[in-house]
Length: 131
Image 1 (cartoon, rainbow, N blue to C red):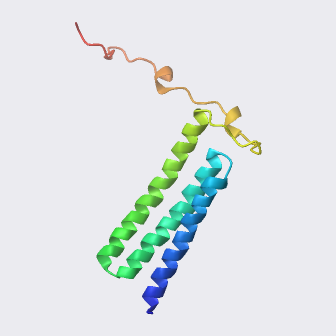
Image 2: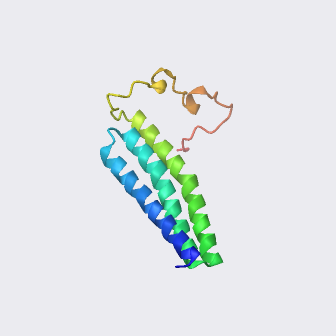
Image 3: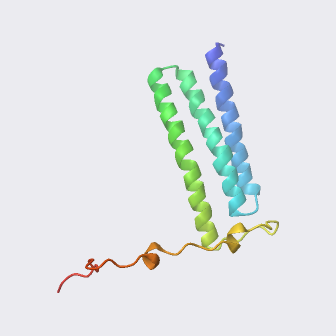
């Protein structure tokens, strides 16, 4: 085996193991927040390693460029998606595990909606259509 083949197989196997661990964490963890943590961290790193392993296997610069763009896109969107899912779960009242004893948002005040704090501008359109 050549060095590039060994590297690509190693990257893909380690990535597959991380994705497997994320799947196991999804089944074993107690609440949505722990499950989300497992899938967003291990899953993201696992997918990155699998994609980079496949790019190493093909050895083409075009494939490497596409793989790099895929990894960058995944690294930008996965944390934002995890944050939004966590926020929606919290605001939706998803139950927490009984071992969770810190809830910093429970004492934090939710900011008011922008419409409630803004003063109306004189002569501004009210949004109603003329009859």
